[in-house]
Image 1 (tube, rainbow, N blue to C red):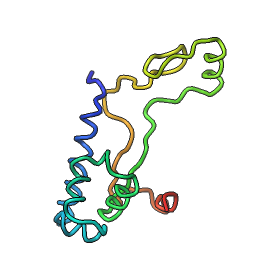
Image 2 (cartoon, rainbow, N blue to C red):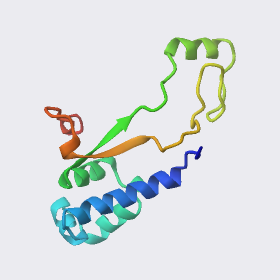
Image 3 (cartoon, rainbow, N blue to C red):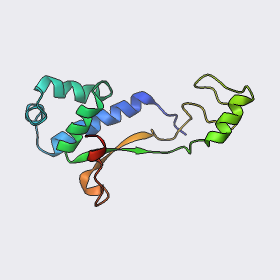
Image 4 (cartoon, one colour):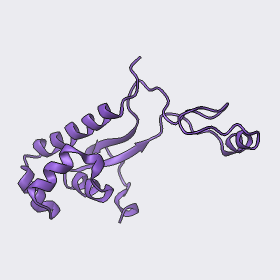
Length: 133
């Protein structure tokens, strides 16, 4: 089983952003004109999307006909079990696990978190952009 790797997740996001732009037949300069930024900024976003603002990444994805989706892969512990663990003095620093509370970064066979979904795969009638405006 492969371990979760944040650098792998970043590389996948970089490749996906560039792939969406290329698939739409846009250069970095053209995409920059649509975004209201220069080509150099588009290059930086593609090179390190984790350093760009969420708003810029969301606008870029919208222009490319995609959106970001957060997918829960590990069930969150119930608040009552977390509170009980803390009351019993079993609070642990991030990254260590307390009974009934998963570690901050559990092992995963695939990276979790944001998933870029082409607009055609999005659920019909769902307007996600209004939550970010």
